[in-house]
Length: 431
Image (cartoon, rainbow, N blue to C red):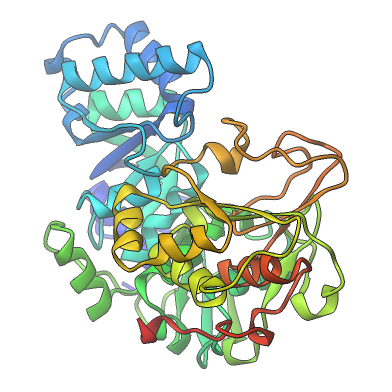
């Protein structure tokens, strides 16, 4: 057959023996998601189609409604959208994740809604995160979800695949975030547009699930249609612990055709940062160590997981943020917050001077206005995007780095290579 992971998953879900890059397929969906920033359009389209009864939306029970972008709602309009979502989920038997439960890309796998070999669609470009579990996850519009709920199907163009071989093992203090930033600097934003990335190699195998999710998630900035990894014992154990369906692991054939094959020596990578206003203006953190920062953000769907909290706490426990630096921590889910609290991470970060808020996307996208920098202030963030004005002030700057880089910079007041401070070479295997 000689097929890639993406081709195999889409062929299976289209009921075909084989598909090729460029083919248009109508595929059966395993699970769908709509978040509150797209929910209004989804509901309006359902009304427009006249699909009002539960019998007319047979796939609604396999759709999650997630209240995460406007969490908590900053406006009456947002609150009304949440009311609509709760009503719709109740009437149609959909899954509902309410305010504070967490970010869509975290709660779907945590809730056991996906497994290896699945096709998952969601109203967010970072739905590629699900590829960390050997699933084809991709973003669609809210209006498309209405059709999925009615039919259980989606049409897709089969993407070309790019195989990225990550050799070696990341050095202590270097993380998946640094790989994705390096790739953005090398290939540019949208540089792998509509490609399915297959991340393989010894560096991926050495990663824990939290880091794999970061690697898959950040592929959205590269323009990827999907970002997939092979399943291994870590994948299977994690899914079983979260009550997922039995996995149907998918592996590429040795003779599969790829648009490109990329080799990266992960062991040679150093902590990276993306500079102001561009996710692909990337340099080594060590090259800009004199850059002053005023605000630090750790969290979001990209780097708000437990290992990110551990990275930050390893650096900040028993110490204080640099004078004048503020920090916000946004866990990716309620479960992560509780786990971090049990480990003492929340206490350590709070005592260091950070403020911890409820799980959600509002701070990342600047919707809830919890983090608005002043004019000419600099934010260093573990989020996925640093577009001009994203946090509500066009006269401020946003830099991107790993949770470890953000914490180290908050400690010193300047962009800092985390390996140069105590605790900055913490490794996930030490947890």
